[in-house]
Length: 294
Image (cartoon, rainbow, N blue to C red; front, side, top):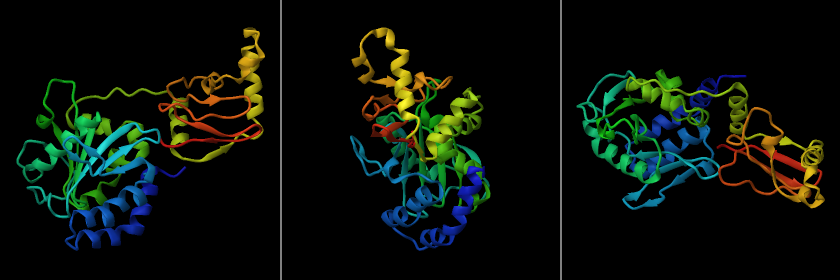
């Protein structure tokens, strides 16, 4: 299987000329978002339209981008500025770790505070501040007693740094990396912390299948699944119980209800609850297993 970063880099090469031209044309914020940031998020990184809310209102203003799972769980916020507004106090093109209240971040402090406010309101752990050329990633909520503004962030000070350090860039903002919590690992490393992220191989493989968005055909297996579920619960001594909802995790060894919780009915497949990972659509013998992001 091709590496995710390699695939994204190939897509970047196809649109880079247009994105750079847009960023260098001194656009306003709306043009920066439409001509550059949308293309980076959708065409390069692989987010889907349904995962991105633009300008949702909050108590303190409008969030430029609120990134969610397919079931509406908030993941992170992006505060966007017009191209060139966030040029940091450095001429370096290297990816670097900076103090959010330090001199390098001075031109970005208002945007950092704005992104922190939105992230706090939405209950997300991380935030991104960008003008398309400069990208800053940082923790928006903390449990170590340190105020967020006293924390550190990972800065890509120029478009060249995004291209030169494209692998860590994708691991901070791409769908698979965010759901894998690799963005938190990078941010914790920047602060000198160790992120304990443990997941079994089967669970992680299942998450990758969910991220792919591919549709799996269950035409032949769905009756067997239904029959197996009814058989496993036959001690209930009521055939009507076969029409109640059971979880697909009964049939997926080692994955657990936190990864997949799918409602199955003997005659139809219902929409899963908001926190579940997948759904079965269709009816009777002909149904499909749909695995969306989140």
